[in-house]
Image (cartoon, rainbow, N blue to C red; front, side):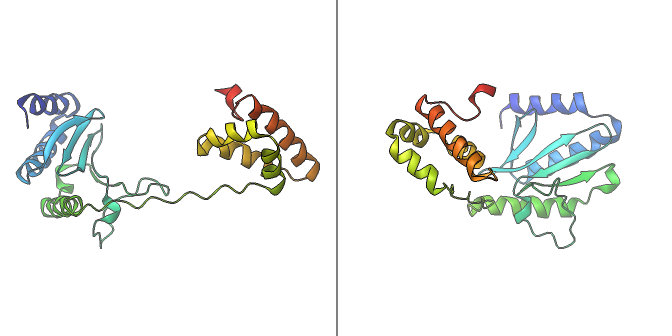
Length: 198
């Protein structure tokens, strides 16, 4: 690690920590460096890497947090790692309100395990996105209008989904037909469904 990087982390800790959590942060930092992690200031916080991100440190007014991006893959039999939100896939954290909350042996175990995950090239599985379900009528309308079809196929999956979801959400057949006509008209001009709002 460069002296400049070390100084940047020190400056971060100087600006964020008070007496109550500085010792805690220094202990965590010492563990990370002793385990051979590289230290860098990323996303305006100290981040520690070994063949990829291992953990990062967040210092707040009343607590300090240690984040593990691949925390969901760590062995956590006692359920000590916190999942921030139900939708959070991999990130898990440990929260320390004081130095008394710090279990050095446990932190070292999690850090070593996270390093091993990176060494093995393991990552959080991503969810496969559903294929678009184009209605038969919309497919036929696209087939009859090559210009609209070309524009539709050139769009990103999210832009295509805007059209498909809008058409498929129509409750009545008449509404669906009107939406298909409007979609073809917009697609001929190369417009995305929500472009007027962007």
